[in-house]
Length: 233
Image (cartoon, rainbow, N blue to C red; front, top):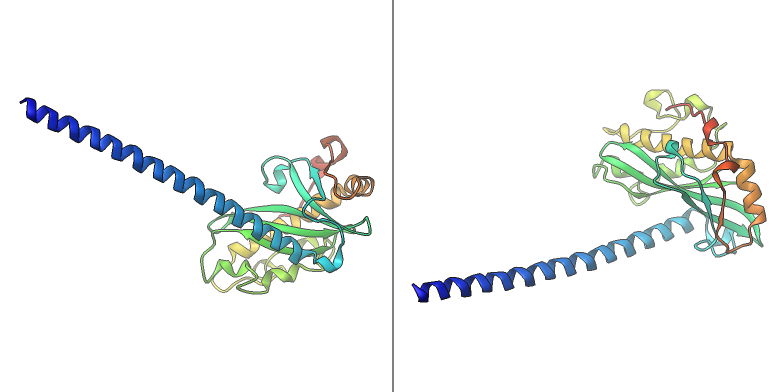
């Protein structure tokens, strides 16, 4: 009995040590993987910023020149919104703001929307999504040029009711076999433009007063988000 008890104890201790080592290895690997994922996401985001507003169109440090805008339920983002400011010789020429389409076919779609000071789209890039490969993933520039169709658009171009896919009476192409994905992106871009238009005066005032390269904040009282009224695509 004593020999059996000792054998059981040794086995239990061995299993315990194995569990600790295995658990530690998994935790270490997960932590290392998470850091790599974050790093890759940051690189993808930076790449998208310079695709929307190329270095030839600004000469400030786009990655460091930011403006903090209050959160908005209509934009479906968590917490305050950090936007990147592009300047040419210290004069603001545009901004890039994050946007979220919560109603993609396979979940949330995250994108960046570049807007000039007049409210015209400079560019749009999708930075994260889970849409179906071969169908909804055509929102990526490496799969198609569809997302570039927003360039030069504004709230008056097209008219509010035409901010939709063609299947629903709009001007934007849908994908064969996939309408929900492009419709969600169109809606998110339009909502971003409405947010900018309703708060254009406060945003422009802050952009003009904040020194280049310095993070500045627009307080909720400066904005008129409660007056947003977007035509739903």
